Length: 311
Image (cartoon, rainbow, N blue to C red; front, side, top):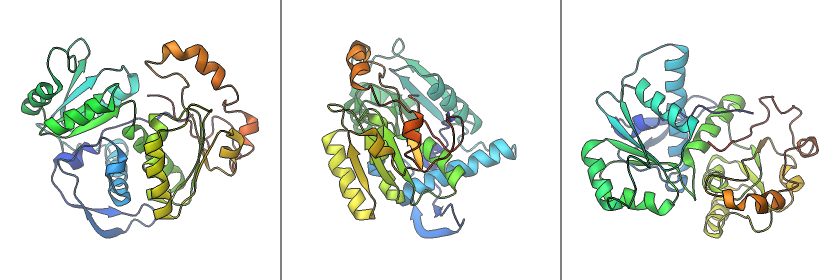
């Protein structure tokens, strides 16, 4: 199982104002397209092209290498502050975000539901305006995607989705970075998802085809991905010539996969559904029977298998 340290390195692109070239990871050569991410929100990966997502991964890999391997000090966010709204708790998201922002010279400010009540003590509009006057960016881990959309509409600073009921983009960016490091190139890989049709699967569906990756997802009946997300994912697959398979059969989804991805069956806020979900997801465990259907010859703790936990 690979637990990805989700460092918010892509914030540097939002704030530093440089026009970097996108690089192809396999050959290391810059493409002709110029990418400009300054000031943009990161609410869902459907708002970004494949070249823009490739750039985020290139920047993250570059900064990770320079900071962790070479020991460089890169205060790209010196004098900048990040407001961190956490309606949902998370050990790894909080620690990786705070650590990453601090390593780049910035000041993260953690806000829990006891510190800030979205839409309760103040309206979302007022909250967005106050945060815009005091911070340079906001990462919000919330229940409702609509709250993020409102914050982004009313704020004058970038809003980053740290998790919502519909999408979890920074989780998938971290997973893609791990796969990039392992396989060198994402193009042509087949991702096999077994589990809930949730925010993580939605984020994969909004981005995998843009890299030339195929997606095979198995979910229990009644737990399929959102219909509007599915429709857009089918469009992306057609435009990029990739395969998108949505099924209720885990063995079918696992067949020929290069990467096996799963998630918790019971996310935060779904505790009342626990008994029902445990029954519905029987047969969706990652077993040796499932693994034998993939292209992977490794065991669970090998780097050939990526399990994506709820972070």
